[in-house]
Every structure is written in C-alpha cells, then in structure tokens.
Length: 157
Image 1: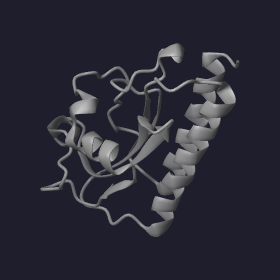
Image 2 (image 1 turned 180 degrees about the vertical axis):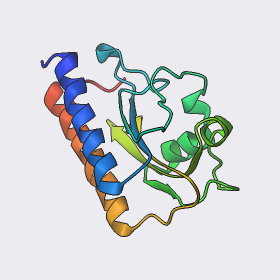
Image 3 (image 1 turned 90 degrees about the vertical axis):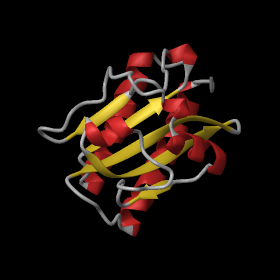
Image 4 (image 1 turned 60 degrees about the vertical axis):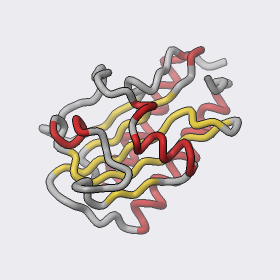
C-alpha cells in the first residue's frame, strides 16, 4: 500500500491540472477515506488562484448536510451550476458570502455504490457558462481520482 503522503501528492497533482485546464478560481477534492485520515469536512487537495481564499482547514460547513451534496448523493452525477444566485439545489451560504463563489461544478466520487467524496470546481466573480470541455475535464478528473484510490488500495469509508 502506498503512503498517504504519496497519495495526497498525486491527488494534489490531479486537482492542480484540473484547475489549470478549466481556468477555475478554486478546485478542491473532499474524500471520506478513514484509513487515510480523509474526511469530507476538510479538503484533501486544493488549487486556487491568487487572492482566492483557501477552504483548507475550514470545517464550518456540514458538508454531508449541504443540499448540493444531498443532491449528488441521490443523483450520482455531475452538478453544474452556472449561477449560484437562486440555484437549485442551493449552495451553502458561506460558499457565496464568505468565499465569493458564484458558479460551480461538483463531480461525485462514487465507490462501492457510495458517495465517498467529490471534486468542487469554483468560479468567483459572476456567473459562468461552463463549456462542454469543462464538464468533460471534471469527469476525467473524477475517474482519475477513483483510479488513484484503487491503485492506492484505499477502501471507501
């Protein structure tokens, strides 16, 4: 089994590549993998632009209770929100009010038929029409995270 530090380093690379490809304000990865010490209430990996607030270490939002996460748990598919003002399902208020996020895509990480995490792609500074290429990039990143967890021998929590 690979070390947790090696797994995190690879996940950081995947997140950074996605951030660059879609020109996002911030990209985060949250996972529930207890054997690695990962918990969705904090980010495992993050990439962000200059001046964009980090979500690392911020545990004020009950992630599993968020309407967007409940939706992903039920639908098991990518959630694309071009404008978070009045979006359904609504994003956590802190995401928009404190962190300035105005549009997002959330890609569920499903393993063993359970939602074990997700990739969040955030845009700050107004609505954003996500392109088909942006959606495809998130879908590839989700698959790459699943593959990395499989290679690392990480069990779903």
